[in-house]
Length: 239
Ligand code: UDP
Image (cartoon, rainbow, N blue to C red; front, top):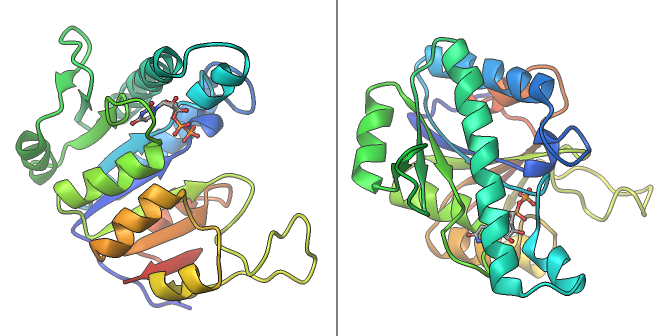
């Protein structure tokens, strides 16, 4: 398995959970490691954009079960995401990589507003673009945002970094010891076999617009750099 794809422009989705290192808040060591890996690929010439989740701060659906209004809780979730974005920006710039954060909720003091064409220009100039605050709309997940931003900014692929699992399996590997990693699958097949790849809205959007997707585990040494540089790790979901 030495075959690799050369991507021009990619979107990397990172779950917020990993930013917290398993706790609420931020673990700077984790963010630094991720930034170094992204920087390596950016220096090698890959145009990189990033969507981060916010699970290390708040998830709207969870706060709802504890009695909060869903809409307000979702906005809190989106604001949490922005903190992750600023942390990643900081460590990327310490690596010498120019970075712009664009948020879907306007907050001019800390980030640019989301302007798709400007985001593309940034990437063409070698800047890493971090899309923050989700879609700016309650009831969406950052997985869906990742697919939408990848499509709108014309990325070749969306790379979904997972924690605790290294791709899509035939069954839940935590429950079924016979489950095996799937190296490649079409959207159609994934749907028919009811494989759990990514949340349903994101999956449908990717399928309809024929966006290649790679689901990979971020724990392996240098895995983020490898995925960004088109190495065949994890599961490739093809149109
Ligand atoms: N969120 C939202 N709209 C969006 C993206 C995110 O309302 O477009 C909120 C939602 O409450 C979500 C939280 O932000 O639970 C954090 O995002 P997510 O759960 O996707 O983060 P992850 O699980 O990837 O860390």
